[in-house]
Length: 123
Image (tube, rainbow, N blue to C red; front, side, top):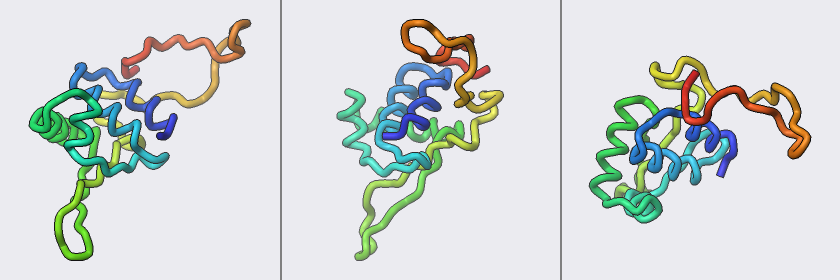
């Protein structure tokens, strides 16, 4: 799991079902946004049906949040697809990528930055 990729996925304003599938992909992804879970695994993780996950993956792909890479074994048999999340290439409905810099005032409780951006929305 990559915190950078999870932050990116959480910052997108998506409906609940596509968001949970994207979060499941992000949860499995490396720092480059690449992962290769099976549809059945994603369905179990998201408490959805296989066909629902397939439909959502097609929508996330057409909206350019996810890029699919077909994978094959050495014997040329199909295996799970590879998924590259668009963490460095945001879709056109997101005006800018999430800001990863620590900015803002420091709170007395956590010592962390105070966010002025509401979560889940592209700014």
